[in-house]
Image (cartoon, rainbow, N blue to C red):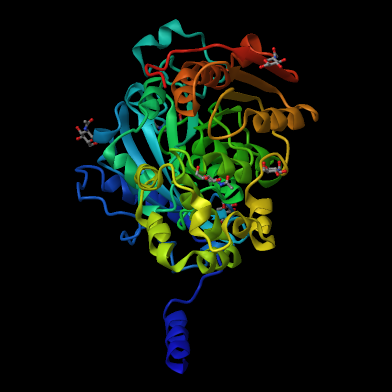
Length: 468
Ligand SMILES: *[C@@H]1O[C@H](CO)[C@@H](O)[C@H](O)[C@H]1NC(C)=O
Ligand SMILES: *[C@@H]1O[C@H](CO)[C@@H](O)[C@H](O)[C@H]1NC(C)=O
Ligand SMILES: *[C@@H]1O[C@H](CO)[C@@H](O)[C@H](O)[C@H]1NC(C)=O
Ligand SMILES: *[C@@H]1O[C@H](CO)[C@@H](O)[C@H](O)[C@H]1NC(C)=O
Ligand SMILES: *[C@@H]1O[C@H](CO)[C@@H](O)[C@H](O)[C@H]1NC(C)=O
Ligand SMILES: *[C@@H]1O[C@H](CO)[C@@H](O)[C@H](O)[C@H]1NC(C)=O
């Protein structure tokens, strides 16, 4: 005990915590260092986050005192232009955020520069005769600024991947080395958009913890905007949109409703949300006994990583013979958990069954992190698309969420698809999500969509190639 205290004391005198704000200066240095690595790039095999020392906040100053969104670390991710089509270069940022308990926390995001950006003028040179096609663009109103070239979209999409697991080693910053799971990052890059993919569950892989995910997503955007000018994004014109489906929509929706309080000055052009899960307890009841039952242990371990009293309760109530099986989700991806637990009665893992998951300590956790629609009303355009017969979440919960927001002046386009399952709507909704995102990012939203109030349609889109 005394030895430990002594060691800590020595450690803190060896590295006195600086209360000054050093990263303003060092951020540029960090960027230059990251770029110096670039040519030639270092192709070392990436390590999973649990083993990679880069996934730690800096210890030479008190990063907790920095502002949310402050970039604390930058590095190149040199292999991602091989695994993600249409990527020119990629960087990873470690940044300050705020967890579900409103304590300082950190997260990681991956920012990918589109290949098309290689043809955009270099922001560090100020020659006005920069490109071949600038003759076709009208004279720029600000002669000191370079005209925008048509292929330089100057847009940022924050794309929240549904990774649905309490295993930190399945975080997108590492998983992207295996490729772009839905091809949507590649499609967004092909439009010339910068794409940021945050590990919004954070270092504890807090799957299903709404506040953590929303903060991490918003601060990921702040972090990217802090450095993207250096990568050639024209910050004074760039628009920002956020998009996610299912678990990715969870992060995106929480970002939307938290933004009015947590990031009120952030200029966001719009949020696209598909396959929403507004109520964590009703989703649990829906999933129990189905093919997707494995998402319940993932969700319980994920959300309770932000609520240690609930975590202790969960572990203490597991039947001893089943405890190890249940806790093995910590090492699984979403797909592995779905296979391992499919069609199981998850409540039967608990001594007290269903009631064990609805005690006061559990309800407190759900109340903080599990119900959408109670933290604020999005002040930016929102597109929501959902299959009416979504089997993961009752469409009535989504209807109620939309109603709530529409009652206080939100601007929402809501598509209820008469065909398809949860998984099919991912595919069925994709072209509509892209069309909508294009409009908010290129400024044509006002011409193409209603800018006032809510527009609700029952639609029928059936392009998913498989039928259940
Ligand atoms: C950077 O540092 C300068 C002076 O040290 C200060 O005026 C400025 O506000 C800082 N900028 C940021 C973004 O912290
Ligand atoms: C990836 O980037 C590196 C360095 O920037 C480059 O040498 C390599 O050709 C790129 N690979 C692909 C597939 O674009
Ligand atoms: C940009 O323009 C300024 C003023 O005209 C000049 O001093 C500077 O050298 C130029 N920079 C580059 C990179 O061309
Ligand atoms: C969530 O769903 C449960 C179970 O269906 C229901 O009892 C509860 O009222 C819902 N909570 C909210 C906040 O909508
Ligand atoms: C959970 O699923 C099992 C298997 O389908 C079913 O027997 C059980 O009644 C369900 N429990 C609850 C509380 O819905
Ligand atoms: C959509 O269909 C439901 C029945 O499934 C109906 O109650 C509702 O009024 C319809 N909404 C619109 C906007 O047409």
